[in-house]
Image (cartoon, rainbow, N blue to C red; front, side):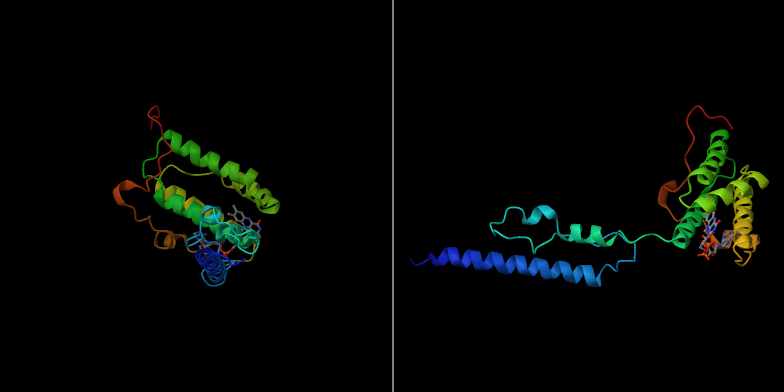
Length: 195
Ligand code: FAD
């Protein structure tokens, strides 16, 4: 029995369309998102975009977000984690207020304490506990906190045989974030806070 030419045309179009999506997915995966980059996908083809098609076997077509998830499971190294954590801490110190509230001082001390208990590298956390014991957090002002942090980072640097950072250059290395309308201000206080 001869097939309806329109149906054949539609089926052919569907096959070509899914083949293009498949190759596009592979291209994006290979060229735009190296597995180790740790960056968010530049864009993705939604998994819902192919759900309504009528091809019987769609196993060869995987949505790009599924493929990217599988690749992003590359483990983070201790060095990457350390660098990212120091970046967060020094950026926080640069944004810390000159006249912090009592709550902000309390929060920053708690943050360091929590880091020394929950940092996901046991040897680092244990060592940092000792560092904090010998160097209690000083966070009376932005300058005090950023200098204290520079000092404890240097204590860790020394123990790892890394170069000592000149703390008088900390503001040049970790400047304030550029944000419009105070969007990067450290909040952390409530209306009940007193200075
Ligand atoms: P990092 O030390 O990560 O520093 C990042 C950047 O900060 C540097 O490139 C430099 O520009 C700048 N910098 C360096 N020193 C200072 C400073 N004193 N003040 C301001 N800026 C500075 N790793 C271990 O192997 N063992 C540990 O016990 C351990 N403990 C850690 C405890 C904590 C709380 C943290 C956050 C990390 C710890 N790490 C530990 C990781 C380690 O400190 C490094 O982050 C990691 O080895 C990567 O080092 P890096 O050379 O890339 O520079």
